[in-house]
Image 1 (cartoon, helix red, strand yellow):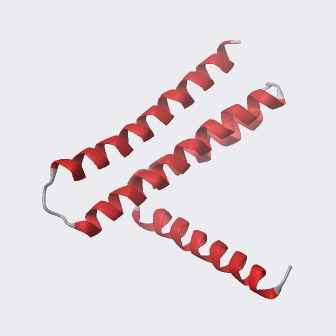
Image 2 (image 1 turned 135 degrees about the vertical axis):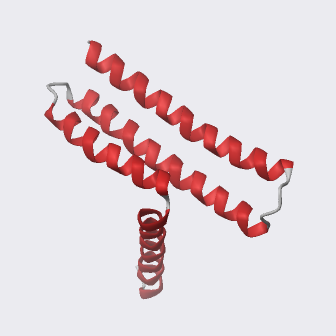
Length: 117
């Protein structure tokens, strides 16, 4: 692998870290979900469950964080286009918010299913 390849990887990693830092500092929903993850992920390691169940518990929480980052990205792009009310802008934001809600439903289902067994 040449130097250009590694430079691209380093730049991509740097940009990803910048996005994550922005979300940590300025995105309230991401901050709240991260606090939930800080509670639930250690609980997942404390519970006496199989390795696969533990992976599902942790992955379902991380999935919420991933979807929230995408939601924030969509909202930011829409706001960049214009802050005036437009039905398609609202729809785009509502759809990305619905994706976050669906990820919460999935997490809840996984946690309840595993804890009941």
